[in-house]
Length: 145
Image (cartoon, one colour):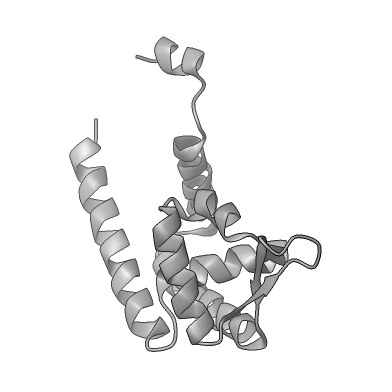
């Protein structure tokens, strides 16, 4: 098994990615904020609680994140016309521009990393990572252990 080698490579890649993203997105955006912006771009508007599964965090953390994003003009919060208890979160114009900028920054990093391997190997890597991240059914997990 290559567990140790994989762990070292994965750790280095994720560290390099995080450092690059933190540096390039600053000062107007964080990686967590980019994640919210991308989800909102795909869904037009959402309730804050709907963001939780996409961010794998707590409701309190989502609220704090959205507070900062609203303060920085990245999102808008609006009350529902029919039910005032519901708050809808959507992208602002600035949020749309920052989403594009963040995706460009991420794509440039990924292009630089992936350029070290052939197109065929890039496809293979994506395929293999997809296999690793596909949720296992209970029966499948038992049969492979």
